[in-house]
Image 1 (cartoon, rainbow, N blue to C red):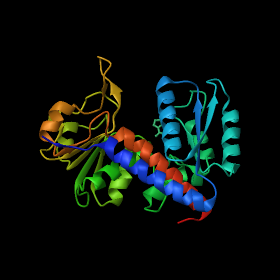
Image 2: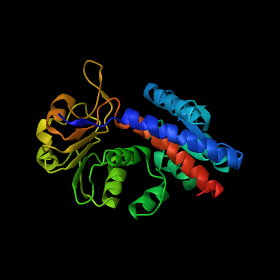
Image 3: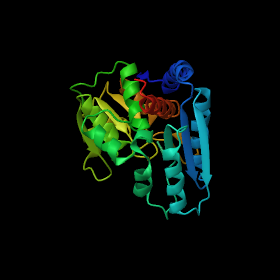
Image 4: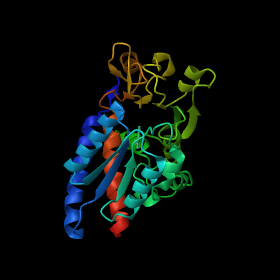
Length: 285
Ligand code: GUN
């Protein structure tokens, strides 16, 4: 039976550390870090994420500023709001919850956020800094994955890492992070031929496809570490990952559960990024 990587417990520990750090830094600087969270429309899943993000901020002593725009808001309105927040000195981080309504262009909107305040790490400047191996704000889910591997002392250097999924939010940035940690990295995706065979090569398998329980035992090398980024509902309406946990945990060496794995780490990393942006803005290093 595999070691279960407990993201919930690790995230709670990190959040406590951040709360302590915020208390001491904010007392010295005379201002708490601030995060602006923008939601356009009322997608129910986004509303849950946004609520959890704001709550986590408050628990860590970070001030959260919520902005809810209606589904039919114009892109101009959103860009004006972002520009106001770029200028607002109380705001260290700006997060615009995705997905955006169809009439908005995601690239234009993410580009409008000042890179120094881009706590999601989605701005092309931050993406470019990451891929050239420079310090940047790193997108939260990939950062959470790396933090979990390190906390459980899982060797990355020289190991084979296969990522299933090539999204801008997870697949591509997690590949860059693993490369920076000296793994040999393969990005596989829906068009990859003989996916199970490629995955069976992996010492570290990261599933970020968004298809309920697609990864079965025959994708996994015995003893491998399996990181499940998926959050899906199966046919019974139960929350499941991209990995079939019961059978995968019989063969893997270590595995993250869903829920309680990567999900809580994403929020912890958002807080960490907000404090990093705050420190950089105030020259506290
Ligand atoms: N939608 C799904 N995941 C994310 C995320 O990490 N950040 C934002 N802003 N939107 C998302």
